[in-house]
Image (cartoon, rainbow, N blue to C red; front, side):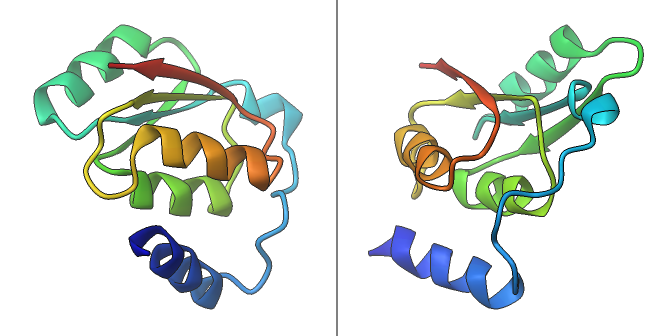
Length: 107
């Protein structure tokens, strides 16, 4: 139920929820880290940081989905046990929307 409400809100904010236009040169540098623990989010960000990489942090699945709808990412690193919209819910939504992103799950 919560997930359906979140999707409805995202749809209301976004008129076009189709796959974002790919910027092949920039997309390979965008990484989305989804982790509810501030400490782990920061540590993952530091580990993944590199020249030309853009690391975006999200603390929950709802925020992550909103970011994924707004722009393309090449990699999503997500915790499985997120509050509300779990990592598994996020992966299902990524697949159902056919978003071109690789996903790594942590638990």
